Length: 254
Image (cartoon, rainbow, N blue to C red; front, side, top):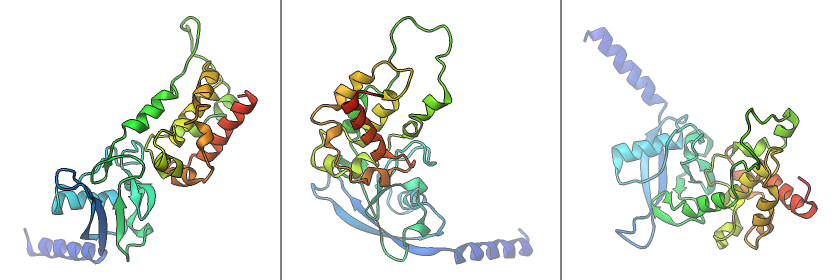
């Protein structure tokens, strides 16, 4: 490599380094094989302020401590698998930039609440997905299989458009105080996914879903705190959807 090329490479490295800042990630660790108690552990990392929290977690795992455990898949805000509590708020690690969460102070990272922690930032999602399955999140029709597409007007589609955006990240459900205190509650995500089919003009099981949500652990447990709406990374009006399901239960019009 020529001297000129080496000098340019060094200059580029220095320019890149000049943008870095040192942040402290304070991560709540848990490993049942070591202790029944969780503990906080600090990691000082040099990062670009425009890096995502997920990028820094990768850096910690790949370069500092390979035992750090968390979920992630697409890393682009679609799969929902990297939901966690960042500075006390439910967020997706892949959509949260370091510069947006006050990097001058330690950044706290912990598992979402209300679900059993398996290890570090990984929780048991089985109860969450069971509630989702219980509300029948699929189109139900009767009669013979159609020979052509079931048509729907733009107005009918718009009626439930907002609740089609759910990515099942559990950010809304695990931000709900009712769910924290009683894991039997269906939770916002399940109700949102029931809403998506209750108000679908092509579906024929709306009454059945409403009866499921009329249960003691159903929609009436909601206390309208708006935590779920604030936590949703997709901007779904979760609280509004829950209220619409309550109204449908009272009026039986949907």
